Image (cartoon, rainbow, N blue to C red):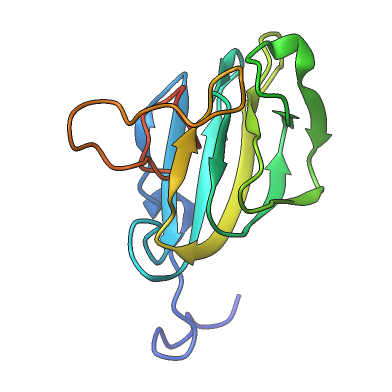
Length: 157
């Protein structure tokens, strides 16, 4: 190999140095650039471990997704039932259309986690949705809607 590139020209972070947060074995998130909770562009990795899903929710802005590895299972139903999810394999691109209901994760029985690269323009505003398709009240007094990457595992992502 040649010399290490000048970091002023080609800044990089090795995979071993990327910081993952969340719950190993459930869902983990790594912010690659920006911050989904703040104004401006962001990119995050989300790792869904088999048997774990968000719940039906919607976002107020466009978000673009690329499935890096594994099978990412998605649904556009208001009803949470993993039998309603569809497999989106590695190498697929998709997007979260603003204001539309969806939810996602990895089905039990998968051999590896689903890893997705998600990018968008912050701040992310997410609303949990009930089976009737209506927004659920925020969890807790004064709670703001959750954003993908900031929400606990199993919540709207």
